[in-house]
Image (tube, rainbow, N blue to C red; front, top):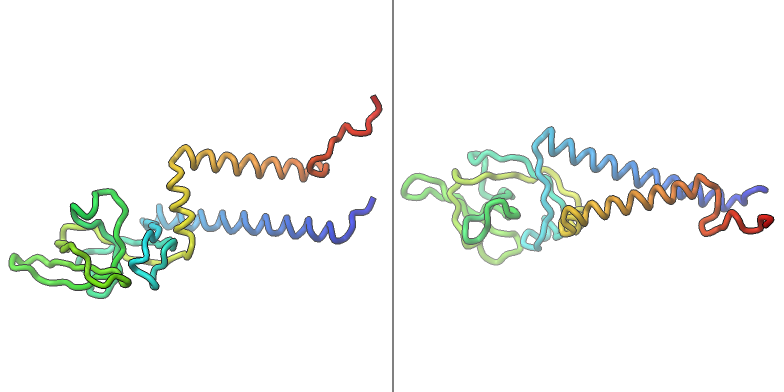
Amino acid sequence: MNTPLWKRVVAATGRSLSILVLTTTLAAVTGLAVGRFCFDLRYEPILTGSMAPNLATGTLIALEKLDPRDVATGETIAFQPPKPYGEPGGAPVIHRVYSLTKSPDGTTVMTTKGDANPAPDPWKIDLESGTYRAPVFQVPYAGGVITWIRSLGPFGTAALITGLLITWLSVRALRRSGEPVGSDPHRGAAA
């Protein structure tokens, strides 16, 4: 029995889209891993609108190490805010350097501000006391996905990956069997 042309076209389109999505996902994950392990990039989602419109909420931003001597007024940087505003190891703040001033003891003090905020941040940071990163590139909307996956925790993420893998393998097995989904191969057989 010949399969109608439209069914073959739909099946071929579905296969092509599946391959495209899988290839794109694999390329993106590989690119992120290479950036992380070969170039020491860090990836952070933009969680608030404080840097809008330049960095929209939900954007994923790649950050490279920045020497404190290279920090300049007007530059966007990622940093840990001082206590009590932030905790070591917590999410970094990504804001613009508002001003750099010399204190009486000769240290450089940095003030930062979010582009969308009406006033500078409440903290002053000794420039030599922190670790800084500068944006390299951004991927719109990808930060929302990363934030959601992080919210699942390790077991939730493992369950999500396992479920997706089982679903993919099941659909693949059904396609290879040639049986329509939901059909009973024993129906109509002699008893």
